[in-house]
Image (cartoon, rainbow, N blue to C red):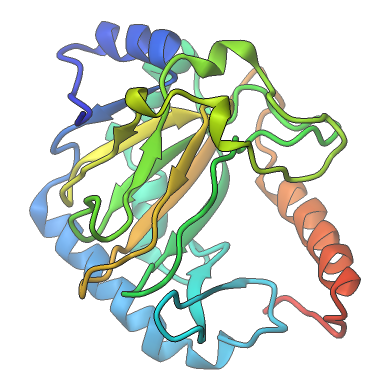
Length: 260
């Protein structure tokens, strides 16, 4: 199956409530997406010094072919990339999210995932974590800088399961879901072109496969919450997230972590 785009703004909200996700084709113009792709390349070179395994801004994944630990993500990213910041606060996107929420949206989290060839994907999970005050209105917007497809490990969502809420223990930890939690025949791969966006909720189960292609799959992941669900919480979130990361890394012997 391939996700299709609703036709009207009313349809977006209905699809989100029914399926837990939707896709909008060509929300952003090609010129802006070319700037975004150029910025992603520039960030890799201009900020090479940031790519340290002790810098908690950066995320790393194993290469499924070589086993090499490979840089994959800047989280956060909008303070490094003005085009990423422009996309995160773009009027067309904020207007779309206001339609979904029925009220203004606030940026909660931002990350740029590069997913180079060979890098593994993420297991089946929900994004919502049972931290005190974590917004239940949490949703994520995917903005592809490269075409995303099954070969380069596009995100795969499972519609309808969001209505059950959290499917894992609510203990404040990240948990993957057993594969049999979902019906694989319902899988919807988010096959996207630059300019498209996909939106899915924090309770929508999703996963991604390894990038087995020779192409990168650079995507901006932007998460938001509704105005009535805590207002602007981005700075608070990153303070709490970084404190949590330092504790988790220390459990695996990685000390002297920092944020730059």
